[in-house]
Length: 232
Image (tube, rainbow, N blue to C red):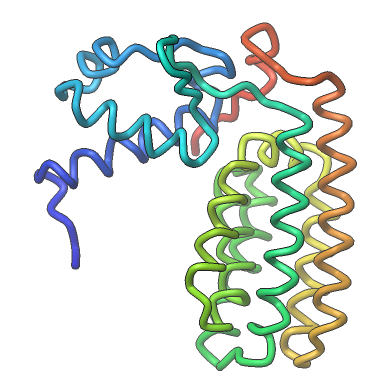
């Protein structure tokens, strides 16, 4: 069912998308205070959809909502990012084992379209689209396995890593492109183990990138400028 953007649910979903993009792109910096009333006034809505949106983003790990304390944008945390990547590694490998064997022509087409979009995004230095295509690429494989819950969890974890991944792309693009090409070739050949090996290599590169980008426990407002990415 297509939701009417003018309906309460449509407005809430649009607000969630807007806030998510602002956090991911650094327009709302790590550690920045979030006040319901200020956000409601800024976006021309009541406090209720703001609270609902922040709760959704808190579930995605992008917002912190401690009891009886001020809400804020979640800091970029090295340990949390590595933990998320470790869980994603397990989920994605399991999804690949089931998905590659069940991929049909439309799944392969979606995977190849995402790979082409990823290449174009790198050429245009469009980091947001690059990450979006990366998510679509892996989702095409995992979702082909038929376990929608596993696929949704994998996407959620990738979303929580997106702020770090956009910065990682500044020096990881060639590694990411090579890894995805290896995965695509293995998927077309229905070689599950080769695809998983390429996936694991890509995650190893990502782990090293996180360690380089987040040498300390967390990053707050004083490092927020590093995470600003131009919208294209």
